[in-house]
Length: 120
Image 1 (tube, rainbow, N blue to C red):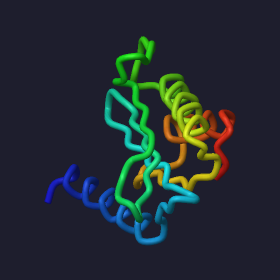
Image 2: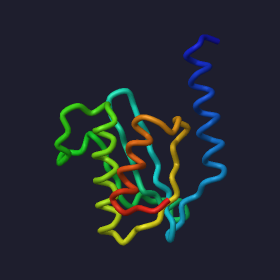
Image 3: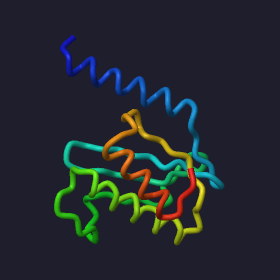
Image 4: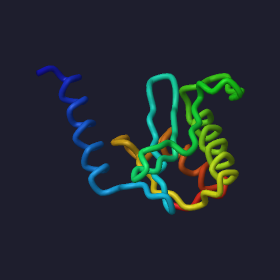
């Protein structure tokens, strides 16, 4: 098994371990983060109902972000997600980092969401 496959397996294991412990409810939905090489995606999910309540990403049509793969873009996504969630009446969420380390873009998104009024 080559190095990249091992890396992907470790990430998948971390992601599964996190999802065993974290569940989104209607009162406290799950804020799930995914980061690709060029973009950042975030969703607020009610796992019991099985639906996404709000979402935001660097690929949104109304997102005016020049560079999409950096911490500033992630912060913009976090702020936008918090704004949309507040409009739907959501203030408390459970943070799901999706197996990614809590630094850089993931931390930037979380801090911006907190600053925007989400509590986790």
